[in-house]
Image (cartoon, rainbow, N blue to C red; front, top):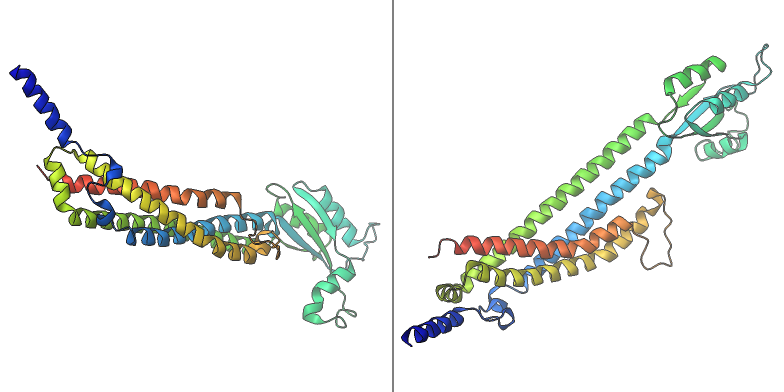
Length: 316
């Protein structure tokens, strides 16, 4: 009988030492973990993360648009295009166009008319100034894949029509690619920095909650609550606050990104619709924005767990 009574007493003591369910908030975390400071700071970090993510995606889209646009084009200038050699029935321009169309790696060849060339020069020379000029012929070439072997094509064109100039936009291509890669690297670095700052914010808020609720934490720890139990309570609270902050910061960033998307649409091949309240954003950006609150919640959970366990480890 005494053994049975002793077992019942020990079982009752163990039940008494257990923590109550998390919804009871027996540690007073609603007062201990700042419910205003953490969401606000995480929201600010989520806002910056949204801008950084948009910058990285926009830089990639701009670089891709350039690679598929001007970088994939050649401009060929043919002086004295109508001249014919004595042993050739074709004009210089016809020989150049035929040679370009027969070259591998070229998808489209378009010889601009005299009126089109004059229209291009009109902003600089005026309409009257181009009438008496002996303008060279301009051929717009669209490359495909890796493009044609530029050195070989240039040599063949100059042999067929001496004085022909070929502009591959190589310098501009390299500059644009370098700029896009720099913007991407800066955006990812900013995203990493924002993540680190958000983790620091959660750490500081969690430690402040531990200090403020020190007596309650020590009491339940002394009654038999494990480090995992206490850490789970703090982590659950930090997860909810971080998720709320991430959701709010992302929502605030949406109208800003909409305005930037409307401005950047012509640069990346899109068309801004003035009647649309939300310009079309890339699918990758939508997925990234949807992931930001989830990442904030996961960051809050992991950071709070590590912080609380480290604080409790020295306790007996």
